[in-house]
Image (cartoon, rainbow, N blue to C red):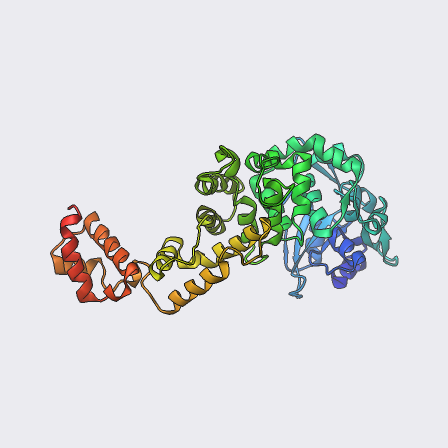
Length: 441
């Protein structure tokens, strides 16, 4: 990092480290996201470094480094922003030679601190808005008028929420009031940007800090009306706590890895408000899976994670009993799918804690052990495990390619799941012949 700064200084330009990395260093936290600001214009920055990329209108040049711990560094020309007509990006930027003007356009004071200098001067801290005092007070406060900051860029409200959770900071009253007054502007933020902030928030040590802020300010109702409706719905799980409290407990208790489990915990009861009747929530798992899918689609959540989240929500209401036979355990595995079992059990752990139960309560430890035993035994669980396939059936039974072949294979799979000894070619073929009359052509 010093090498980049020194190169800019040697060329006669002012250069500073800015933003979250300065904040993190001052807090004694590891800094992972390094940004520089400079008086050099973008073409001047490009001329000073070899590995560069400049493809934007905002004066930011990406510069590659040889340090894998740092990776790519963004170097941005000092600027002031104007005309935020879409509540997200400035329609016009003006380059300047003032670090103070550049810091004035930032979101919160703790991110509006710089370390560096004009060329020829000793590096020093620049803190025109009291960011160091706010770090000491663990306080989040906008740079300038909160209403103006959030009117310019609605994403800043979600960043405040995320910082509150990741840093463990309070939000000052004026900033909180500004978020409440401007919450509706989040409608103008793209799903991808909302998803990015949510993912970072859910990775925080205590995500519920930020999620409660989202609910209290009205941001949650804009992003997910279904989640916002959870407030006030009785749960009969922990005295004095409602459905939203249960959800927040589950999210905080959910495993950090894989990261999508916390999103599954956040959405696992999203279908309850829509299905509530007579104090019950019949079918909320199926409805919730559909609502979660719709929300994740709007957020452009990565498809592979989205499918996993929706699948475990659809299956999270399984009710294990110690009286289950081994065949019942195999049917459970076949229904859920081998690849989703760990996800489902991690979600059940979070749900247990959210309900005031032990993490492995409700027979979770036992069903995990029984599932592991069946998997270790190499039992039949899907069509790939059968000792015959469709080609064998057609050749031995004189069948043509048709849905009948698939129906026969699934009927054989059901029998083999119930009794693994059936899974031999001769027995499966004999069984298939006996089932022919029951499977329409």
